Amino acid sequence: MVEFIEWSDDYCVGNNLIDIQHKLFFEMVRDLSQRVKSGKRDVQAAEIVQFLNDYIDMHFSDEEKLLREIHFPDLKNHQAIHNEFSKSIQRLNRELYSEEVSYILDKILSVTQNWFLDHILTQDKEFSKYLH
Ligand SMILES: [Fe+2]
Ligand SMILES: [Fe+2]
Image (cartoon, rainbow, N blue to C red):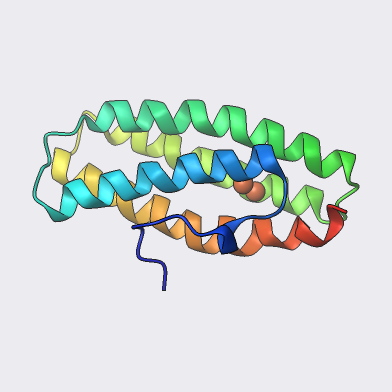
């Protein structure tokens, strides 16, 4: 069970750039979960969604470039999963001004925690074995 407290090298896929970016994502989730748990909801939901948008642009482009370089056979499917995640962040962006801040923060937290577990630690791990 991932506690979102401390990064572990077990989470690495084995490519330096990608691992640094995954760690950045992990730290964002950790900081957000600590704030939500401690009741400090003064965090700017719009800033987090902006961070996610920028992060996704950078990370998906770098990761897909790497997957092309290593001829990862499941690239198309992997890209489709990235696109779905981008869409869910865009939906959050649209909800920012029509929903309660605490609802948005809980939603961002669950979406990003699930992404870390189901994608970064699971689907991204699939390309580890093609890296050498
Ligand atoms: Fe990734
Ligand atoms: Fe990925």
